[in-house]
Amino acid sequence: MLETQKEKIIRFFDEDWIKEVARKEGCNEEKVKEDIKNHFKGITYDLRLGEEAFTSTSKESINLREKGSVEIEPGETALLMTYEKVRIPEDYMAFLSLKTKHAAKGLINISGFQSL
Image (cartoon, rainbow, N blue to C red; front, side, top):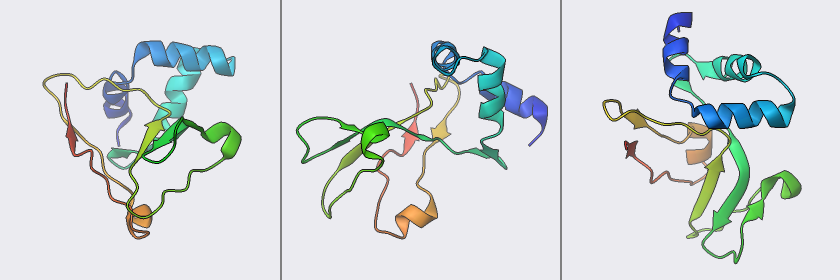
């Protein structure tokens, strides 16, 4: 992907989120943006798993930083928070999909197309 295309797409990442990550990691915003650029693969961007998950059987959120993983039982629904926070402009559309290696384990993605 051309560098100019990455620059255009980076504007979809929430500026407040970028500032918050820079503050938490003790770096500047340009470092965070460079990290974002490094997660592009071809024309796709791989969202990273965030710190929280929720399952239909859990009574409270699961702290993934402490626990390290979440087990999703057959028939259970889970909400997995992403590390990134993006804002898709009204005249754009994003398609969120599941990586094949996870789908092969029986997981399905029910997010579909996202718009504001």
